[in-house]
Length: 56
Image (cartoon, rainbow, N blue to C red):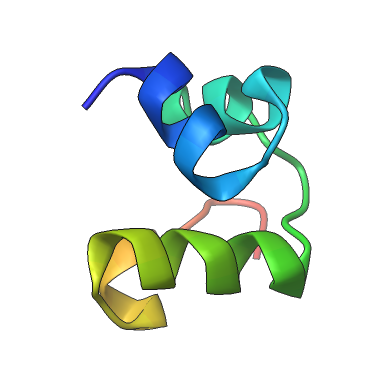
């Protein structure tokens, strides 16, 4: 699915989707997570994973 398709289906801004796709987003609104979960018929844990960081 293309970024434009996700934007059209969810009403989210293309920049928001692009940042998530490129893993460059510094924060994600709960509203955004909900829209993506509904579009892809998945749960939150299907969208995100925790990666170990050296900074922790």
